[in-house]
Image 1 (tube, rainbow, N blue to C red):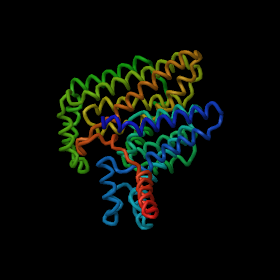
Image 2 (image 1 turned 180 degrees about the vertical axis):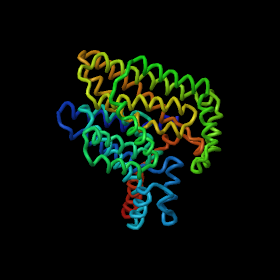
Image 3 (image 1 turned 90 degrees about the horizontal axis):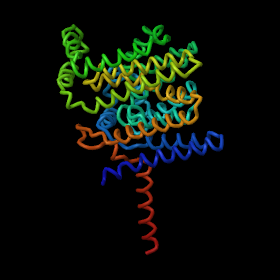
Image 4 (image 1 turned 180 degrees about the horizontal axis):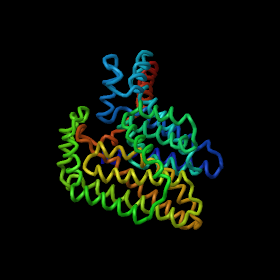
Length: 388
């Protein structure tokens, strides 16, 4: 029963967001929508420590003077030193990362779709994004910056380079995205046959999930003289030896994303008359993200690189669905997507951390609310003593 109670804060947040955005839609003003965004920022920005990752962030922050730039990404080191010199706690760092993530997500949504309400709802519901702000704050901020940067690149704005660099100094994994993006950008601008997309997705899934082609690839990689790679070898050997029974949930996750991207490609090719270049690029980026999920089927840390590509589904889904001419079909598809992502969101809340030995998301606490309740108790006790 305690686990069910742990759902209440998140259900309340989604209820506030839904009612606020509905009010904005009916009143044709974005005031209520931005109010709901502030509630999201309050919820995630003032969260207490839930995961072991944030415990390590807090410990690092308290001892930041012992760390050089090379120990973490420059943004983390610089911000931590500035905030600590100002006499602020590590909660201030958590808030800044949360604020910047939501800021860049909103800015990217504004640039890439007219359907901002539904796009931001998808950001909240897809487990790899909003919920990851409670776990991987550095990487999810880098994902948000990449998301925003793409429109600058497509618009040929010089400021793109500045934000690309910012994403890299936020989390080094962003290098992976930019290397792939730059090298295959010309290919991203093209639409390929539906058969080609299907074969590549299904084949990559079968080869890795069933025939364990990843073992052969990494056995070759392990033999390469790469000093920076050696420290990861023991961990990668462990995860590569996992049995298929130990990654059953990954099967359903990958199957969903394969069907999702194929569905979007089918609708886009058949029913979207105005095939804009940006939409094609983003669809292909989502496709690559699903390929990465397939290739890294047994390797969780590497599969997180897919976030940089899958983030674009939060704007591609509304762009494609809202472009359909049939109103009833449009509503049905949006309803199905909402239900499916709600199920995924709830399943994500029941993530059990082996390291923490608990369901980390179901232990949500807000430091501001805790502080207010504490002061309220103190005032009530003081007031009672005065009356006595």
